[in-house]
Amino acid sequence: MTTPGPGWHPDPEGNQQLRYWDGQQWTSATQPPPQPTLPPAPPEPIDPEKLAKDRKGALIGAGVVAVLIAAYFGVNALANRKDDAETVAAETTTSEAAATTTTTVRPTVAAAPPATTSSRVPATSNYNPADDPEFLFLGALTLIGFPDTSDSTALEAGRTACASFRKGEEFMDISLMTYFNGPDSWTPENAGQLVGAAVSAFCPQYKSELPR
Image 1 (cartoon, rainbow, N blue to C red):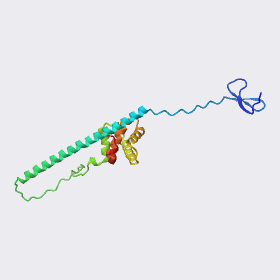
Image 2 (cartoon, rainbow, N blue to C red):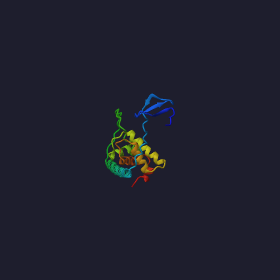
Image 3 (cartoon, rainbow, N blue to C red):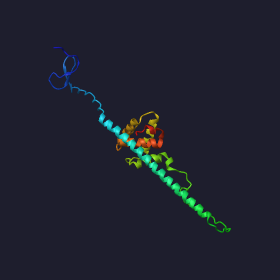
Image 4 (cartoon, rainbow, N blue to C red):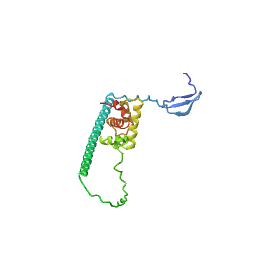
């Protein structure tokens, strides 16, 4: 029988443990045998069917939001034209009435205008919500019934999407990245909707990259 070298060896007494051999005799020192190391679990395979479904959802989402935004601005444009036409008609009627009315003007002392503390925006204000990208973006999300999300989260995701377009990335990759990085309440379709709204509001030069 070959004498083992000093070290830990299976216990000659038959126990499921190791016993230390000092080179001359078995000692009383024992320890459990090492546990076998399991190989790492293989990565979960990508489900082609699920990936295709996510891609389809993102495409549908972007297409829907593009149509809704176009419809929204089309309705507003028609409403603005109607308002302009009514304003012009009212001004014309007033001018004609003033031209046909003869009154005697007597010199009077003009009274000082009453003081006012009104904080309303003057009627001559040039502010137009259609020129505010953030207003358009958040308004588009509200229009399509986007999941309840903080404005800051949505704006950050929208601006990130436009930055990705500027880097040369494609719509599908941007939409899926938006989906994976977004809140759990977002679906692939929601991600496509957000990317479509972001392009319309922040980087319209990439509208040709959106699905038709």
